[in-house]
Image 1: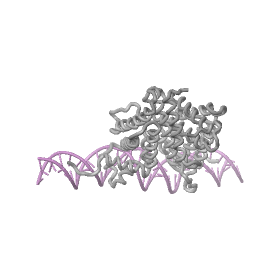
Image 2: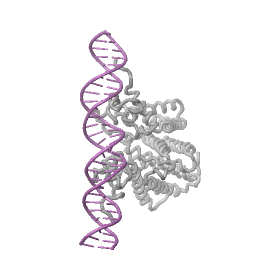
Image 3: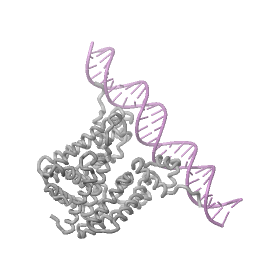
Image 4: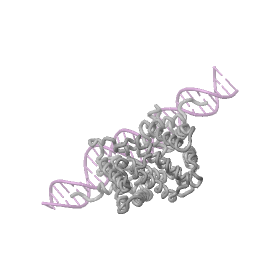
Length: 203
Length: 203
DNA sequence: TAGAATTTCCTACAACTGTTAGGCAACTGG
DNA sequence: CCAGTTGCCTAACAGTTGTAGGAAATTCTA
């Protein structure tokens, strides 16, 4: 019932594409409206405001990322699974830098005030948890003991996210081994660290 | 000559303080003008525009960070130097999260067009190089061979920057070992990686 | 087929930010 | 005391966010 046209999902998908095209900072109500061929007040029928729009894009993109990572992790364990996991995230970030930016540029409120918070923060938190669970699966496949799981996830996330962020920012573009050459070495070192954590070697 | 009052340095220092207080995104011409008790057009006597303001804050803060890191690295080598280096950056980021944000949220243009670029991009590039040189000093103190220097710097930067970024974003606030407890373990693993690179162990 | 309900989209408007232009006032140096 | 220099201002315009209220289009129902 009602007149067909834009809906919330279409608006958010278009916003994600816009992030890749012009950068996450360019995802504003007016720019998006122009891209969709409507006037800006129209978008307020689908999102409650600019921050809701951005948070919704973050949730949408976190889901896409979890889908892609999860598909790449279909089989394997230990080192193979680590490489599949990390490569999937890096490929996603390089193919869609604006989308990847959206996954990082969002502060998660410590206590989400569900009364005044936009409707999308819950989605973003849930999608974030999906990604965290995938990281946990990698660590568990190494046989890391439960006491070390959180540590191993933090180490792995820090390296993967840190390398990709710096690479995307261009920090590796002006020194000599190309970034593609040092990435496998980073995964080698990370693999050694995870095996060490799994076998209980601490210190 | 002339009337005393604000100057470019005072404006940029106030902008850095504002970043810590309200976040780097809040560093805008009008908000800064209100905080300084002047009208917004006044600031155009000191910066060429909003992007110049942000870039200048980045350069200023990168210099502060290099000063702090360099002071902390006064003595020591190998593992001690690594801990001094990494702790200095982490302390800086936790004490001044808005300033730390400023160091990351800036794309360095691949070919800085000196004709149309704001006057501050050169400063930011130079200050960035200062920080890169400090990272290189840590790696060299491990005795890493020249062929592995770039790799070691990338690994160390990725881990340190990645961990600090995720910690600041609150990603570690809801799982059990507190972030302070896993940070030394991360440095342990990183120390092992750097020693491995130094002794020439490459798969 | 006529009408009702629902949803989309619009124009109009208010408030704020970034920016330019031009002018007044205050301080410094001779 | 005067000239030069500098800092800050008001005025004005374009662009963005967000609100209010209304017109059109589509679907469901009678």
